[in-house]
Every structure is written in C-alpha cells, then in structure tokens.
Length: 257
Ligand SMILES: Nc1ncnc2c1ncn2[C@@H]1O[C@H](COP(=O)(O)OP(=O)(O)O)[C@@H](O)[C@H]1O
Ligand SMILES: [Mg+2]
Image 1 (cartoon, rainbow, N blue to C red):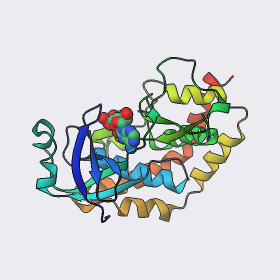
Image 2 (image 1 turned 30 degrees about the vertical axis):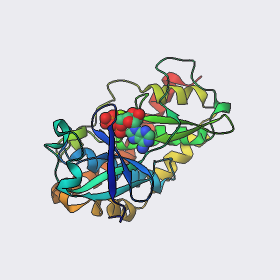
Image 3 (image 1 turned 135 degrees about the vertical axis):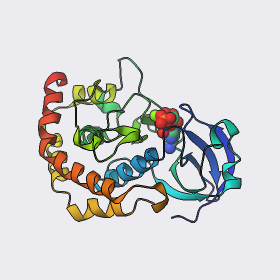
C-alpha cells in the first residue's frame, strides 16, 4: 500500500466506474472503488493484469493501491459511492493529452507510433490474460511533443474468462473472443514480421511460476479472493500458456497483410 492520499474529488470519467482525484503527490489518479457496480473483482483484474504487464515491460499506466476512508469516498457523488466500501482501492495515474483509437480507419501508421513493438506485446498479452475488452477506449494514444503517439494500456477490469464475475469454474471455460478488437486488428495490419510476436510469446511462456504466484499473493486481502479462486487463477495463467501461440497465430492469419 502506498502513502499517497486522495485530496480532492474532481470528476467521474466516462463509463462511470473510474473517478478522478487529485492526490497528495500532486498528481491526478483515476480511482476504481471496492464494491462498484461491476464488483470488486474489477479491481482484482486491474491489479493482477497491471502487475503481469509490468513483468513483461508493457506500457501499463503507473498505478497504486490506495487506502480510502469512508469520508474520502463520500466526496464521490452518492449515486456511485453509496455502494462503495472503504479500504484498498485501485488508482491509475491519469495521463494527459490522450485520446483513444478512432472507431474507424485511417489509424496512425507505424511511423507515427513511438513504441510500436509494445502494440505487438499488448496483442499477445491480451490473448494470455483473456483481455477481450481491448476496445478503442482501452488504449491511450498520448500526443508527444515530437508529434508521435505514445501508447498506454488501461482498463483491465474485464480480463480472464468470466470477466467481472470470474471464479474457479468460469476460468476453465476459455472460449474464443466474441469480437475481434479494433486495437488488435490495427496492430496486425502494421506487423512487418512475426519475430516480435514470437519473442513476446516466448517471454510469456518462460515467465517463472514464482513471479506469477507473487502477483497473486499480493492481491489486497480486503478484495475477498478466496484461496480456491487464487489457485484457479494461477492454474489458468499456466495452462493458457500452452494454447497461447495457437490463438495468437489464428488471429494474425486473419488480419496480417
Ligand atoms: N489513467 C488514465 N489516464 C487517462 N485517462 C484515463 C485513465 N484511466 C481512465 N481514463 C479515461 O477514462 C475512461 C474510463 O476508464 P476505464 O478504466 O476504461 O473504465 P471503464 O471500466 O469504465 O471502461 C477511459 O476510457 C479513459 O478515457
Ligand atoms: Mg474502459
């Protein structure tokens, strides 16, 4: 748990689950709270996926687990906050000068993206953690002073089979994604060769079990993940490595130029 403290509620962000606060470190953070309308599992998913993304050096937005009291929560309009519970909350650093991806092409070309390799990493990673929610709004394009776009990944609340409501049973049912992601399709269209894809697959497959275990162990106690569910999540992440290459290449065959 960090020592930064939320000081002032600023606004509720689109989607209504994230609330913008200024914090004692001078930064603004988008905060998702316990027992919100998606359920506390949204925070679990945000945390686990952000930590796994960091292990792979993917452009996860910096985040903190912050403690919020009842009084601090009550700064958020009642329509949302009446359900919220004090304790550990998930806060991601608010990145300025960002847009999502446009709904339709033309999308930025590879030359306009600062970190195009990261997009390939995000694609492979999303197939690992079952990130079926990589919509145009869940990637941030930051306009940099040199005119290029920096890529950031946000919103992993709906990952893993079962999404906001995953449990030991749902994790065993890995179906195909219902809809191909516009971000993944954009990425596939820019890929020049498969080396970068295979290197990310290799990185994920060789990620030590102990590192994955550590992430799951660090889930805040007050987010109520049972031991059985933690074990099932670990098993999911290990088992999914075996079919990862297959599912990524099936997707790419459809969309690579
Ligand atoms: N850390 C952040 N930096 C900049 N914008 C953010 C950040 N977090 C959220 N947003 C903005 O708020 C919107 C909603 O947040 P998101 O985490 O996607 O929640 P939801 O689960 O409601 O989709 C995002 O699409 C984005 O526009
Ligand atoms: Mg979102």
